[in-house]
Image (cartoon, rainbow, N blue to C red):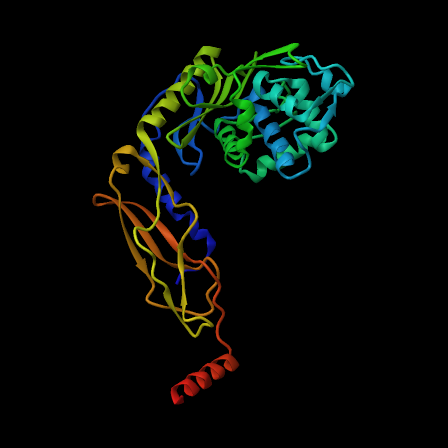
Length: 379
């Protein structure tokens, strides 16, 4: 019997290996780009994805992530009012022209950041979450490290040009995935095409034209400066599958959108998600010297597979379970494997895990069990 919750990742890793050969089946003009599927995190396309480049306002994906984590964690609410500081109002670049001491709700500031990339609102949110922009930037870099964003150093919350402020297409996809996977409520802002603030006085039009023109677009963030050129984290969902296209240093605004559409359309045309469940109820596995006679196997988390559409049409499966396991059995111990096949090809091996703990029986419990059995037999 193999131990460990880590076995839960087996199916996703197998799927990733199967897809690796297709990662360069499409081309884009941008010097650095990546396409990732949200649910499994599988990379479907990569081009110089670890090159460190300026992200411009795509930086705000991390600003939005930390803000949404504060909201979902109860630190903030959408109705909280923020008072704009002099520092926030001094940002320049894309903004909604906040005035010092002007008050605006968290909800409306998030809308401004997502729709028109408002630097003033991004800094106001950062100051509210962490006390100051500098403290917030420390959190940004800490969160980046936690997410495995090894190519990234943040210097501010906006993406305005700053020495050493860099990331990569790979890291943009990582933080974008974290945002849309665990904080889907961000869609209420990122899918807005046109809206307004200040009782209709301030009109907003999304800087991400894919929201209007690309079927299934869900976000996420544009960015451009003279040095960064044109960057984009584009997300879209079709048939229950959401994709992330990160494009960096596009030569023109139009080119970054074209590259993102190329990547997204390639992904939707060639891949599909399949949720795997056992065809029949899984039988319990006998436990030797346990407080219970059997333990019930369950399919590990991560039973969602990303497959090439040519493989996803008709899937078969088989189950292999241990004939018995010794106590103690820990929650998450591997009890067997569900093997998924397409024709003769194995496309995934998903761990079947113990869904409960089964302690080893003590001497006293064993004696009581023997006496009970003897008593019932005599009766």
